[in-house]
Image 1 (cartoon, helix red, strand yellow):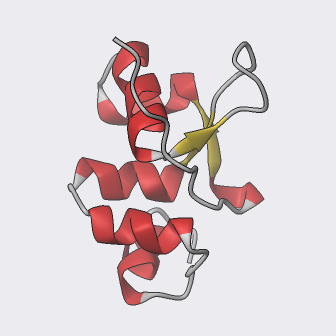
Image 2: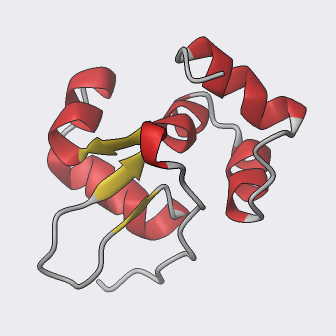
Length: 93
């Protein structure tokens, strides 16, 4: 089954983490995180065989089921209250 890919969220360099780090932080498998990257746009890669670059802020929002924060990140609204909440929680304030 092929899933529709979501437009990736906008990321600042300081918040980009690897697939391995995302798995460590969540306890989820690489397959699950990669699915979230495609389905919810919490990660990006330059071509299909490239490594995933994942937004730590979007990953945290996904863990809490906060799709509004993910949509705010997609729009580049880094100053939104919902986005700032996760960024500050991660020490990225």
